[in-house]
Image (cartoon, rainbow, N blue to C red; front, side, top):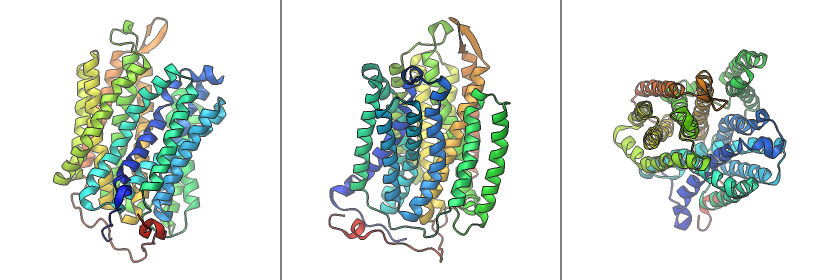
Length: 489
């Protein structure tokens, strides 16, 4: 693969900021609905169980569409698919702004799940468009946008909801989404790196069915009951469907996911580490909000408002922004494998701080920020490992699978945290509230998982041999001429 020519002029200077803005928007869209959840039953006339689907629908759609859109980007053009994902996200936001019907809102939130593919697609564009000396820091910045957007989304949504009609929040995100689409369309050019072939429709349907069964069971098990009939059907169905899907993928000429490539230790172990890191990281976000909002009568709670809670998470987003270039420098000096292992250890240290003191606000914020710092190091190293281990024409789909593994880790973390806290409650003011012991058990579990992630990172093979092995059957398909050769491009 020849070195990419830089994009001249103003457009070139805005390529990375435009992609980063898209990543931040994606994370903001995923979190803005959280402050609304307690009030949505009253605002929409729906039950609390139905309202929870505004989160579940986004999770399921994102998990299914991330590898699918990644594969589509490798085949048909990463910029084209990235703009499509951002457009679906924006359309979903407009639908939420125009309606109070819960069915419409859930459908819109499912459309917004397409935005989960923004980060892997953007990382793949950066690989294709940037020279090696700029690639590491740009990929690290792109990876950190997930945490930055999540940290910004919660307080932003809480402030808007507190002082304006809740539809205003979605009009604001719609405007930001439209700006993101325009920025990418203007500042990013289409990559010429393609992998020709027929799109695997059967593989797409099989993966969608398997993931829906798996993640629906994981995310709804606590609400439906882990021994309920629906859960006892969903998990075996997931196993059967995904087994058949794997059989099909191994025999398909142009599979949706190259399982033989994913089985290589240099690709498979980063996927495993992504799942474990996603599990460890997500417990921090879930527990911190509940901890600081707990009533003071519990003896540990601070009874903070949702706005104050969002501000408590903001330092974590700032540390992710500050440490993304540090992560890139460590990866350049020691390799991304070391950065990944270091990030997992830092996450474990953050949970050690949380276990040591979860009563003082400044210690809670400090512990959460340390976990966020470790997450930045780990999440920045993961795509670099993938980029070094897969052919250039498969970067979007491989990174999409890596993000999918993070999503599965986060969904599993949510279920595990809920299971622990439900079993460790006490009555306060007539309601059941999680005990401090339950929170400490959660921190212990997440810290232990982070150490397992460190161990998995350390056994990733050191050999960084040619990341782009020659493949005679593959060729570079030129992008549309104006994108590469047009005036000002």
